[in-house]
Amino acid sequence: MNCSITYIWHDCFVVELNDCILIFDYWADPDGRIFDFITHDKPVYIFVSHHHKDHFCKEIFSWSSQLNNKISYIISSDTARFIKHLLSPRSTYKGKLRIDPERVKIMSEGDYFSDDLISVNAYGSTDIGCSYLISHSSKRIFHAGDLNAWILEEKTPSEKAQEISNFKSILSHIAKTSETIDLAMFPIDSRIGSDYTMGADIFLNRFDIRHLIPMHFANCDQSLRQKRIDDVIAYKNTISLLNPNTEFHALTNPYTGIEL
Image (spheres, rainbow, N blue to C red):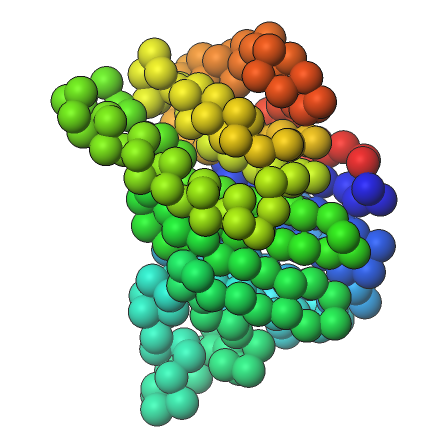
């Protein structure tokens, strides 16, 4: 596949391809090392799935003045509303986060964007914002954002059934573009409760996933985080039963990565 993936924190990853870099849902950087993983002079695409604080930090809009790279921002429409003072030509804000709107592509569910290097399909979420499927040189990379079957234990049976139905509906839209995904970053978060893997199970049964990387398990205190990490690692034992062609990569320490 000729790419490297570095886990930064929670939902944030840096994916370096031969001719560009993709950064997903940057918001926390434990040791302030994000720039160590951005090769200078490669174009950078910064994706924001939604504006929740564990997926988005406005500091990303200062990067265009700190890096030599050509930077493009692909953000969800709810994020655009949240930062409209940074984007509006009528805004009086002149600080370091002011961004040229020409660098920003705002996407909603069903939208499509392409340029000379990548194409992007935006799909819905079972929470807020978008999930993204990126096509690059015949490879497909998926970042789920907060798309999952959020069947928390306190929900009623009918609420859980509706949650699963909504989740499957979005997956059916994604499948119309491709049923094969080379690299997928997907939430596996045991705070959901005993059914915390159901979303991933459904996802793996629906698609041919070549490489799966779990996310969304780090936004908690250290003692609880280790429990969630243990739960993530335990999921590897079921992968071969669901999709024997899937390789599972549990990147649980910041700044660790893999080469594909």
